[in-house]
Picture 1 (cartoon, rainbow, N blue to C red):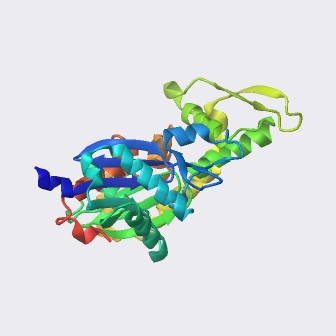
Picture 2: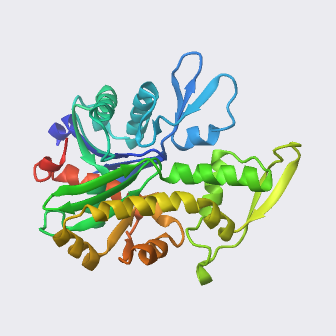
Picture 3: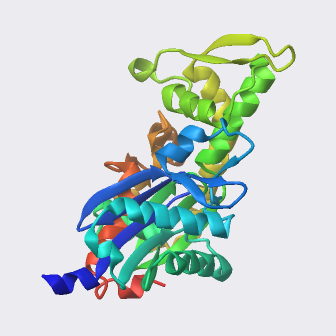
Length: 339
């Protein structure tokens, strides 16, 4: 038993919005990808939920950072410190072992430089054996698809920084597309809309709350329509406090242009898909994963637009993490999928 203390295996979905860590098949960490640093010493003060609670409320001695932007590392030092802090949350004596094996999900459109940055951050944070797996492949494994079968499956993973679209067959990605249009852009759209339409300034966290409470891809949701959400914030011109009720129809309108970009990317990927695999996809449907899959009415809108059924995965937020966990357990079997 003591020998096992020299090997620690963890799977990580290093996301733009959230980072999830799996150990022994269980989710042990699910935290926002945010770190708070002391401006004077550059030392970490908080990570995850505690750091996110500080966001937008910092004093001159504290800065909160989201180290990943658009699915890639924007701040190498902050990312390394965040990974260290999140690994410490796993809380096990074997964390002090000299050997830490990690499987990390990365965007399929990452360049070699971006992949190197992720690997370096993980190694500097204590990883000895670091494997990288593309997020749409990990999502497909997490959904439960047989990625090694001679059959075409399409996965659309809408995360915080990127939307990953991949056609998978025989254990490989036949066609993939990675666009930097995803949850963060939707949040930014809401901020712009509230400023332009209602003259109220809202921060990133408030915009996310609006998205979660009344975010929609269709103006007509029928019985699934959520109640209005009251937004509090300062008037953009006078700075006086305002309370503005918003409904899902307004938000569906303001998100429309961004969702059209996702639709176009899916259509482009389908256009380049070999006919035999296209037929499989029409039969099997297309699977939606990631936090963006939870946007109300998105599956219905895409199904009506593309004429192929869209299925929202069970636990879409956890698909990539679960897939990396399965890949970690079967490193030898899935080694050909990893970088």
